[in-house]
Image (cartoon, rainbow, N blue to C red; front, side):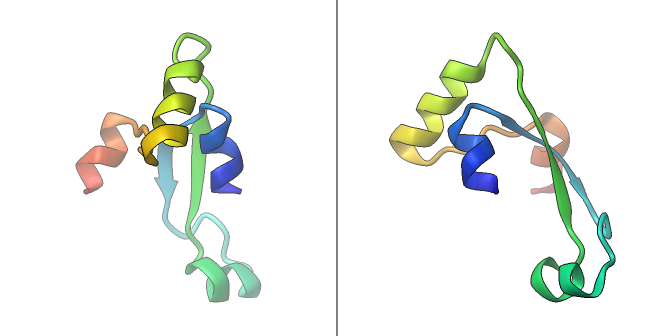
Length: 66
């Protein structure tokens, strides 16, 4: 799912801890879900960054978690 959104120019906007607590989600991703933002003015730039060098464009809030 991430490759789809990032490849289409979305920005990783938010990480949601325990966003999905279903048994399968907990087993596969520890319940973590993310939100993507499609900003019309940066879609092409984000797409190129991901396609060319694998760069994931992130919001300042996600960067702060790193």
